[in-house]
Image 1 (cartoon, rainbow, N blue to C red):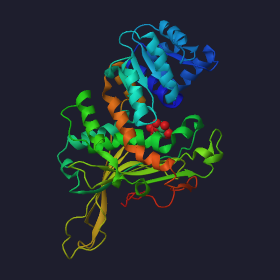
Image 2 (image 1 turned 135 degrees about the vertical axis):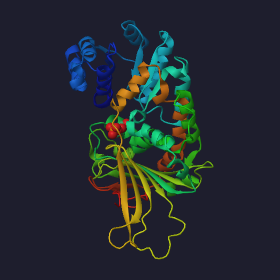
Image 3 (image 1 turned 90 degrees about the vertical axis):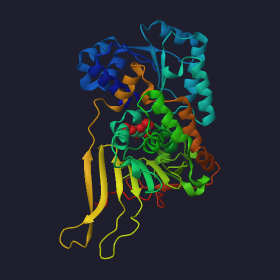
Image 4 (image 1 turned 90 degrees about the horizontal axis):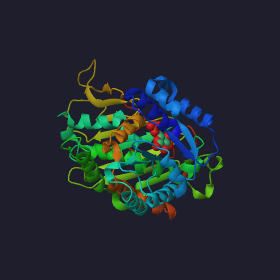
Length: 436
Ligand code: BG6
């Protein structure tokens, strides 16, 4: 993750904003300076040629340290100048120990804490981690990173909804039949068993990223994009969110791809899912009665990454029209970043026959990769794109009935073939391809 997302994001940010940043890597690996530098240079890629990034590359160093020991952390902090940002790319249990050690030391004024997911492993562990963190820094200096919040498409949802008159009045239970939020990947484990086998698709993708998308799709119009206002709106939407019908047997599905159990580092007894689906209700005045189906899986045949809003059928189609009556759909695709609106109009030839058509628009790409956007917020002390503490706890609260039903064996673990479309009995309602 550090090599694939974090460091490339940092490289792009340095190239764009020319920030003076000293990068210190720390870990238990016995790396020499050259190996670390090469790692960072590879991750920076072309951006490493920009002046500020080249300076960071030149000055970067690696310190062998046990970050759960106060003395090692003291050494690290003493070697840093200027404003300090501590980035925890660590498993949750190690993060907790590192924070406890930091509490013994106290931190320089203005230190920022940047935390990778998973943020805790349950609502209660997230709550106790939050309590620990607030002993170290005020909430606005604590950045719980979710790189999906830096994706331009995800933020574009706000523009689409609230900078136009035509979509927003339709978004609610009166007109919407269901919403699917899907993140199907062709990628498999990528050698990440150490992390992934303990997380699984539900925690890796749904509990974190997809719930953030759900919040953006369902929140009420925020007064502004001020971090406090925006994050209040996010929290409000997630507070209303719960498992559909409160029943994990009906409202969840778990599966793993054939061969996962044999991957190096995987413990088959853990029964980790590589594909998860859950159905949620956003139980408020606007959305009550609309099912939100969230799904994410790995090693699938097609990388399908989109939110699909399916509208209800019109109250009545006048007699005399013929042809397919396909549901109207608004599709927001995440990579390629695109917006598509599917609906029916009179087709060519016989004007009484309806034909499905699609209006499409491309979203402009963001200036920076998602991690770069998120890191810019960190360095500018702007928590807009960071997950607030209470929201992190809410996200665990939402998935907990599912994890406990799975642990109790109430929902069987299915299997699917690598490269397939996933297990039978998907809870989604929108198919893979646009009908148009
Ligand atoms: C990460 C997950 O947060 O997001 C990965 O841990 C996943 O499992 C990745 O592959 C997907 O994000 P992106 O932006 O790389 O498609």
